[in-house]
Structures are given as structure tokens and as C-alpha cells.
Image (tube, rainbow, N blue to C red; front, side):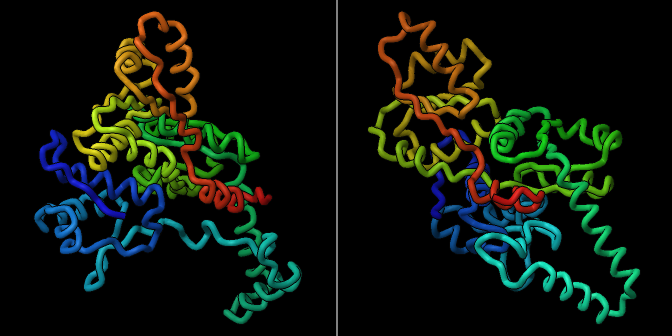
Length: 328
């Protein structure tokens, strides 16, 4: 993936680069454990000073998105612990041995490590109980200021994962877990680090899910004629900010770009009046369509609507389903 910096933009170059790297990681252009371009490579690609790039990488490391390995480079942080996202022994596409043989192998390995049969039983029972506890519900959590991101994640999961899904702002998560400390906390990679601390205190786990790469939508935007006006509508302020930076870095000043939260009626109407193309998330689609219908007489033309229905990647949903025991 190449990064593009618009030098004449009002958005600081470091912010442009930070947001583009975060999006690339969240959409798995750079998967966990992947080595990121060096400061020298990014300097040649973007025209930024290496010190600026180093500061961006340091901030990403503080945020828990990447990790620096001395003498090796900058890597996407692998947030998956040994417990998380392991491929099932019994998945349909890979059955190595019958389950009873696999179980015997695990028991033999623990005994060879010096465990007694009682200790082995306790270890396996605790692990199974812990997994059942974590699979009882999904708590989707992001900061209150961008609770729309949680709603987008929950929208995708509630229709595909057969366990209860609830949305809880990060600021209220401690209280919720104090009342009932079971389930799995799900968030985006942007917010994983603070949630891991809360999860650890309450004996649950926090898992980051990966976003869609939005290749279909980005391809359409790349091919629009210069001078087109594009409106972006979402329930998530964070998604709007990221989209603005990504599109601006991709097309610069060639496109006029407007954004609106779907419940901001006046701004949404202004956006609909000005835009040739509207890109919206699934929950915003009906709001956009109803607003167009009610205000048809005020519009010179109807914009083309492009709905990004999936916020999460199919792969990350399937991984999560396997981890909580919902195997297709």
C-alpha cells in the first residue's frame, strides 16, 4: 500500500500519515506481525522528513497499534494471545486427528511437563470454563464520543454471531463488568490498548476486529471526475474523520468533500443538495433515502448513493465466531 501526503492540505502531514497507517492496519493491508516500511522508505514515498515519520511511529506505539523491535523495525502489534483466534482442531477444512486422540495428546503433553492427573484436569476444566464464560456474550465498546463505531461493529456481529451483542461505552465498561464479568470485549484496533487493561482486571478478554478494506467504494471514488462533490454520511465521527483523510490523500483537491453525522439534519440536507455522490454506512442508508424523499423539491438532481453495508471484514467475523464456539 502506498501513502499519499497532500502538502497543501489544512490537515497536518503527520495526521494524514497517522490516519492512513491506522486505516491500513485496521483493514489488514498490514496484518498483525507485519513489518511496516522503514522511516527511510516512507520518507522517499511521501516526501516527509524522517523525524516526522519517527514521531508518527512513536505515537502509534504509545497507542498500542505497533511495536518497535530494536535492530529489526516497526511491526503491527499482534494483539492475539495464545488463547485467541486459534484454529479449531475440528474445523471442517482441517481435521488432523479424531477429537479423542487430540485430547489424549494434550493430556500426555501436560503429564510430560510434570502435571499430575488432578492438575491436568484442573487446567483443562479452568480453560474450558473460561472459554464458555467469554463466549456467553459480546460487549462492543469504544469511547462515548464515537459510540457510532461500536454500533457499526454490533450491527455486523448481531446478524452473524449467535450470541447476545451489546454496546457499552468505554467510560461505563468498568461498571458493567463489575456487575457481570463474563463475555468478550470487542473493539477496533484504535481502542484496544485501554480496553485490554480493563478486561484483564475482570478476567475477560478484549479482542480487536478488523475493518473492511472498502476497496469497492474507494475504487469508485478513484474514478470520479475531477470537480465532483462527494458526501460521506455515517453514524461514526471517527469513521468520517478517517474517510476524509484517506480520500483527501488519494484525490487531493480534485474532489470537493463534505461529511455529516446522519442525525445532524441540517448538515445532512446541505450535503445532499451539494453532492453528486453519497457514500454512507448501512445504518445511515434509510436516513439518507428518507431525507432525499422529503426534500426532493429542493434538489436540482438526485445524487448517486453508494452504501458500504459491511463495516467489518468477513475474515474477522469468521475468526471471532470460531473463537466463541460458533463454527459454521
